[in-house]
Image 1: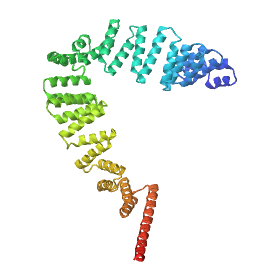
Image 2: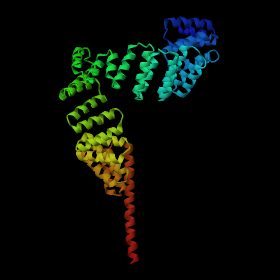
Image 3: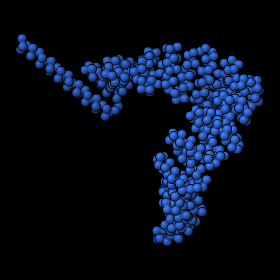
Length: 466
């Protein structure tokens, strides 16, 4: 038994013998995809399509992205099973990210089956692609069709609820999961999702009535104003959940309600250690600063909260309000410059880069930004002023030296241009760039000679004109 022997049989067109050898190899190496491929190929050649399909399907069990297997299965089922043909073709198109074609194939597959299981699985595939392509309304239609076939399909209810939650239609999500429970879905996970939705909708008592999650119960007690009950349960389960970030959110909320803001901050920091860069971290801090009448830090935290939520315009507005309260805060000025530039509001951004340079004269990045902006609008004199400041901080910055020389050349201040081109050659190790700079120096020398000759010619002409 050997791969060489199997290949020799196959080469000699002794397919039955080759098949037996490959089958023996498959038994000893059941995960070898190349052997499965050879078996599928041989069975296809011998007209045994079902056996070939079995091996190509096995390949997909180990490698769901194997295009060759999908192609072979499409060929096998094209004339024998249109449902499988369109399903495999849909899988292949989905793999190639041709989602519209994949959806079309799956819909064609539905026309060739009346089996409930196949219909449900195919509609799940269609719905998933609609979600992937941000077409939530069509995805909702597919999940509802699944429920027409199977009123107890938990996954369809949960998928629907998640879409409604994403669209911020919480009541629709609640209605969906309530319908699931009425139709006999008794899954604990579904009930807990429903409890979370009740909580988001402010139905704290309903959430409390159906949840078995102790942390969620504590949250409900706090929202219902039952502080003593919440604290008692919190103390009871603290050890159990000491590594859960949500525990420290609840402890911070208790301190907040007791107006012990310093202690609340401590728990918020513990939460941040476990859940880095969460918007909730800044939201909680903002609420505490609000109660402490610390307007600047409140605005700063709200700005960071909205930034992490991807709400850039709102974040900019919060930063601008914070800047009004404390115009000398470098962090805020830096954030505004960066965000405004990213928002393509370049002129406004430069105002804040200017403030950055004033607040921190050693900030080279701000000076370079300002220099580049001045160059873009043709204000070379201002550009040279900023670049001179950069060189005062970093005298060997060759990129800055070259820009300065170019600016002076554009202003026809040739002595200064020559000075800085020579300075560039002094520090640069880039041989190719050095040759370019030398060519520029030669050009400047030629211009100066030409201007000098033109000057003498003007003097001679004036003499003869007298």
